[in-house]
Length: 189
Image (cartoon, rainbow, N blue to C red; front, top):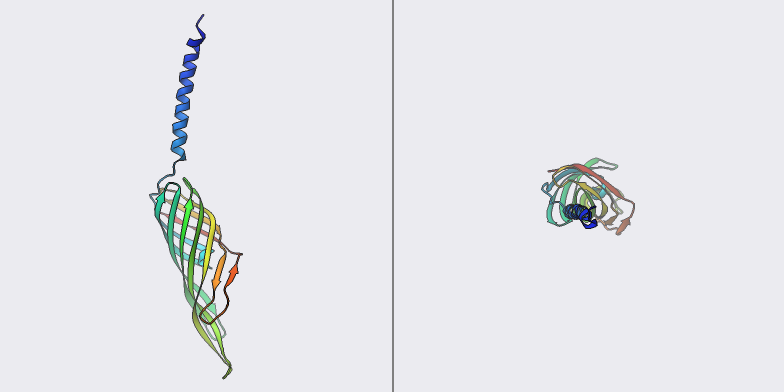
Protein backbone atom coordinates (compact mmCIF):
# COMPACT_ATOMS: atom_id res chain seq x y z
CA UNK A 1 0.00 0.00 0.00
CA UNK A 2 1.23 3.46 -0.95
CA UNK A 3 2.09 6.09 1.55
CA UNK A 4 -0.53 8.87 2.02
CA UNK A 5 2.15 11.47 1.16
CA UNK A 6 2.75 9.83 -2.21
CA UNK A 7 -0.96 10.07 -3.09
CA UNK A 8 -1.16 13.62 -1.83
CA UNK A 9 1.77 14.96 -3.98
CA UNK A 10 -0.01 14.78 -7.41
CA UNK A 11 -3.07 16.42 -5.88
CA UNK A 12 -0.93 19.15 -4.33
CA UNK A 13 1.00 19.79 -7.58
CA UNK A 14 -2.24 19.93 -9.63
CA UNK A 15 -3.94 22.20 -7.09
CA UNK A 16 -0.87 24.49 -6.95
CA UNK A 17 -0.63 24.74 -10.74
CA UNK A 18 -4.38 25.46 -11.05
CA UNK A 19 -4.18 28.11 -8.31
CA UNK A 20 -1.20 29.78 -10.00
CA UNK A 21 -2.95 29.74 -13.41
CA UNK A 22 -6.17 31.22 -12.00
CA UNK A 23 -4.34 33.96 -10.09
CA UNK A 24 -2.30 34.98 -13.18
CA UNK A 25 -5.43 34.89 -15.37
CA UNK A 26 -7.49 36.95 -12.92
CA UNK A 27 -4.74 39.57 -12.66
CA UNK A 28 -4.57 39.88 -16.45
CA UNK A 29 -8.34 40.39 -16.66
CA UNK A 30 -8.45 43.04 -13.93
CA UNK A 31 -6.12 45.39 -15.81
CA UNK A 32 -7.80 47.90 -18.10
CA UNK A 33 -7.36 47.51 -21.84
CA UNK A 34 -5.55 50.32 -23.66
CA UNK A 35 -7.79 52.21 -26.10
CA UNK A 36 -6.42 52.07 -29.64
CA UNK A 37 -9.59 53.55 -31.20
CA UNK A 38 -9.40 57.09 -29.82
CA UNK A 39 -11.69 58.89 -32.31
CA UNK A 40 -15.50 58.83 -32.17
CA UNK A 41 -18.17 60.18 -34.53
CA UNK A 42 -21.74 60.03 -33.30
CA UNK A 43 -25.23 61.48 -33.29
CA UNK A 44 -26.44 62.82 -29.96
CA UNK A 45 -30.12 63.27 -29.21
CA UNK A 46 -30.90 65.52 -26.25
CA UNK A 47 -28.07 65.60 -23.72
CA UNK A 48 -25.50 68.34 -24.09
CA UNK A 49 -26.65 68.86 -27.70
CA UNK A 50 -29.97 70.28 -26.52
CA UNK A 51 -31.97 68.90 -29.45
CA UNK A 52 -29.53 66.93 -31.63
CA UNK A 53 -25.96 67.28 -32.90
CA UNK A 54 -23.47 65.52 -35.12
CA UNK A 55 -20.39 65.23 -32.94
CA UNK A 56 -16.70 64.32 -33.10
CA UNK A 57 -14.92 63.19 -29.93
CA UNK A 58 -11.43 62.04 -29.04
CA UNK A 59 -9.94 60.17 -26.08
CA UNK A 60 -6.90 62.31 -25.20
CA UNK A 61 -5.73 60.70 -21.95
CA UNK A 62 -5.67 57.16 -20.54
CA UNK A 63 -4.33 55.90 -17.25
CA UNK A 64 -5.50 52.51 -16.08
CA UNK A 65 -9.29 52.42 -15.96
CA UNK A 66 -9.66 56.22 -16.27
CA UNK A 67 -9.98 57.88 -19.69
CA UNK A 68 -10.56 61.54 -20.58
CA UNK A 69 -12.40 62.62 -23.70
CA UNK A 70 -13.24 65.91 -25.42
CA UNK A 71 -15.96 66.43 -28.01
CA UNK A 72 -17.44 69.16 -30.20
CA UNK A 73 -20.59 69.03 -32.29
CA UNK A 74 -22.70 71.01 -34.71
CA UNK A 75 -26.44 71.40 -35.13
CA UNK A 76 -28.98 73.66 -36.82
CA UNK A 77 -32.04 74.46 -34.71
CA UNK A 78 -35.37 75.53 -36.14
CA UNK A 79 -36.53 78.91 -34.78
CA UNK A 80 -39.97 80.07 -35.89
CA UNK A 81 -41.37 83.50 -35.08
CA UNK A 82 -44.24 85.76 -36.11
CA UNK A 83 -42.44 87.44 -38.99
CA UNK A 84 -40.02 84.77 -40.24
CA UNK A 85 -38.52 81.34 -39.83
CA UNK A 86 -34.82 80.68 -39.26
CA UNK A 87 -32.39 77.81 -38.87
CA UNK A 88 -29.78 78.88 -36.34
CA UNK A 89 -26.53 77.08 -35.38
CA UNK A 90 -25.71 75.43 -32.07
CA UNK A 91 -22.29 74.15 -30.98
CA UNK A 92 -22.04 71.75 -28.01
CA UNK A 93 -18.56 71.27 -26.47
CA UNK A 94 -17.92 68.77 -23.67
CA UNK A 95 -15.19 67.23 -21.49
CA UNK A 96 -15.88 63.83 -19.98
CA UNK A 97 -14.11 61.32 -17.78
CA UNK A 98 -15.10 57.69 -18.07
CA UNK A 99 -14.09 54.83 -15.83
CA UNK A 100 -14.06 51.11 -16.65
CA UNK A 101 -11.75 48.31 -17.67
CA UNK A 102 -13.14 47.08 -21.00
CA UNK A 103 -16.34 48.01 -22.89
CA UNK A 104 -18.58 49.31 -20.08
CA UNK A 105 -17.89 52.64 -18.35
CA UNK A 106 -19.31 55.09 -15.86
CA UNK A 107 -19.16 58.54 -17.50
CA UNK A 108 -19.08 61.96 -15.81
CA UNK A 109 -18.72 65.25 -17.63
CA UNK A 110 -19.71 68.84 -18.24
CA UNK A 111 -19.77 71.18 -21.18
CA UNK A 112 -21.11 74.34 -22.75
CA UNK A 113 -23.62 74.53 -25.58
CA UNK A 114 -23.71 77.89 -27.30
CA UNK A 115 -26.41 78.74 -29.82
CA UNK A 116 -28.13 81.62 -31.55
CA UNK A 117 -31.70 82.24 -30.50
CA UNK A 118 -34.48 84.26 -32.11
CA UNK A 119 -36.43 86.53 -29.77
CA UNK A 120 -39.12 89.15 -30.25
CA UNK A 121 -38.15 92.62 -29.01
CA UNK A 122 -41.00 95.02 -28.23
CA UNK A 123 -40.41 98.77 -28.67
CA UNK A 124 -42.58 100.57 -26.09
CA UNK A 125 -42.41 103.94 -27.87
CA UNK A 126 -43.51 102.83 -31.33
CA UNK A 127 -45.40 99.67 -30.29
CA UNK A 128 -43.51 97.70 -32.92
CA UNK A 129 -42.06 94.25 -32.59
CA UNK A 130 -38.68 93.31 -34.02
CA UNK A 131 -37.11 89.91 -34.42
CA UNK A 132 -33.64 89.75 -32.94
CA UNK A 133 -31.03 87.03 -33.04
CA UNK A 134 -29.14 86.80 -29.75
CA UNK A 135 -26.37 84.62 -28.38
CA UNK A 136 -27.51 82.16 -25.74
CA UNK A 137 -26.27 79.01 -24.11
CA UNK A 138 -26.47 76.46 -21.35
CA UNK A 139 -24.21 74.26 -19.25
CA UNK A 140 -25.02 70.54 -19.31
CA UNK A 141 -23.71 68.10 -16.68
CA UNK A 142 -23.44 64.38 -17.54
CA UNK A 143 -23.82 61.27 -15.37
CA UNK A 144 -24.26 58.15 -17.41
CA UNK A 145 -23.27 54.86 -19.00
CA UNK A 146 -20.84 54.62 -21.95
CA UNK A 147 -20.30 51.54 -24.12
CA UNK A 148 -17.09 51.79 -26.15
CA UNK A 149 -14.76 48.99 -27.20
CA UNK A 150 -11.02 49.70 -26.83
CA UNK A 151 -10.34 48.41 -30.37
CA UNK A 152 -13.17 50.44 -31.98
CA UNK A 153 -16.57 49.74 -33.43
CA UNK A 154 -20.07 50.53 -32.19
CA UNK A 155 -20.31 53.39 -29.68
CA UNK A 156 -23.30 54.04 -27.40
CA UNK A 157 -24.05 56.13 -24.35
CA UNK A 158 -27.06 57.17 -22.32
CA UNK A 159 -27.03 59.76 -19.54
CA UNK A 160 -28.89 61.98 -17.15
CA UNK A 161 -27.91 65.51 -18.21
CA UNK A 162 -29.42 68.32 -16.10
CA UNK A 163 -29.00 71.76 -17.65
CA UNK A 164 -28.05 75.14 -16.18
CA UNK A 165 -29.43 77.76 -18.60
CA UNK A 166 -27.70 81.13 -18.58
CA UNK A 167 -29.54 84.25 -19.74
CA UNK A 168 -29.12 85.75 -23.18
CA UNK A 169 -27.83 89.28 -23.73
CA UNK A 170 -31.33 90.70 -23.48
CA UNK A 171 -31.49 89.83 -19.80
CA UNK A 172 -33.28 87.11 -17.96
CA UNK A 173 -32.54 84.78 -15.12
CA UNK A 174 -30.32 81.78 -14.68
CA UNK A 175 -32.40 78.63 -14.48
CA UNK A 176 -31.90 74.96 -13.70
CA UNK A 177 -33.65 72.18 -15.62
CA UNK A 178 -33.24 68.86 -13.76
CA UNK A 179 -35.38 66.91 -16.26
CA UNK A 180 -33.05 66.26 -19.18
CA UNK A 181 -31.38 63.18 -20.63
CA UNK A 182 -29.32 62.25 -23.67
CA UNK A 183 -28.73 59.34 -26.02
CA UNK A 184 -25.69 58.99 -28.31
CA UNK A 185 -24.73 56.35 -30.84
CA UNK A 186 -22.06 56.16 -33.49
CA UNK A 187 -18.67 54.60 -34.23
CA UNK A 188 -15.24 54.71 -32.65
CA UNK A 189 -12.11 54.21 -34.74
